[in-house]
Length: 464
Image 1 (cartoon, helix red, strand yellow):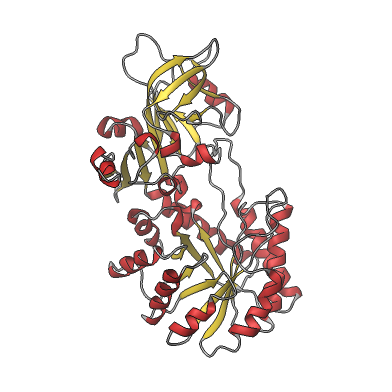
Image 2: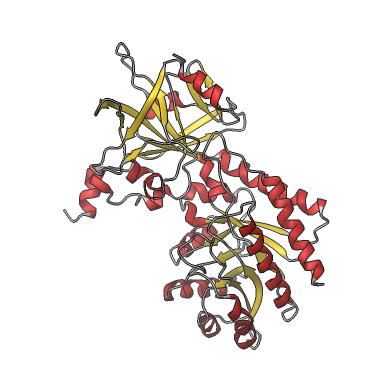
């Protein structure tokens, strides 16, 4: 029987850029993970901060190269969509790379204020305000505009939203319009619930924005749930959107920007293949071609990458507490955490992540199911993106040290969906969270951001 390391090397091209095995132990971006576990224990969430800037710089370069190749005369602006992860260490690391931000709710705006107080953004930073806006959100947006945040752009999501800004914003301001794109053919609805349908966009401009003495339409916004993929559906929806931009541009000279949203996929399997360069070049080329056909200037391009910015910086590490053979063939490895609470996308959306052991790569391997700590029957992980099974090293009877495993590229959405700091299923606590960075000499540094959630904090939340 072969060793686990043989299985991985024969199944994938391995080692890979961010994963190497040295002396039977896994390294993540050259960080020896067993050293992290020895210092902090498990369960443990970690964020590798340098990956955030690396991905931002990569996307910027690809757009710059595509602009040069196709002689595209517009500009490119990289926004980070804050809902992917609101933590201050994420926002500050991202903003170190000369980016702008996109917000989704009223509670984002106090974060904007804090970042401004700390000098992380200034009043020229673009703040693209998306979402269906309750009164407090509209009030906060108006406050930013009245305080001189001239590049705060409320993206209109319904036909009545503009009236608030007309009443409460003192001077001139820019707005965007979110287009309600058609959903993918296999979705439950034909059209997105967010945004304004194509048939109403021209009326909104002519009846409300054009007559205004204060509002100027700057941006047309586009986003589809399935993300930026090389499919007939994506190219069809993008082309439809650009044709609408060209139509509106002819009646609205101040319109000069499109926002194509987020949707770059992240690596969730060692088999991952996605040609970022090709996709960006095709997007730029198609936009230029359609604008040329319609004799209008090309627009400036905004993107709002969230998962792409932060997803690949995250990991969750567990120890295998025990193994249980529940019948003749179903072997369970029980972790010291929960998928429902720590990785809710793995449970709620059947999302797959890169899962690898951190040690024992020279052990033989076998098929297992991985079980979480809650009493819910759905708290398990038993298949990978490339196969319907999970294989991990065997636990030898003479071994005293546990097997440790890691789920990688988990940095987007999991804390917010899991109710970070609140009450979670079976009162399973939020794990420790460690920040990993590298100094100017390339030396790995670690910092404990938050300890494991305490029972006292849960009792307080529960009213005890």
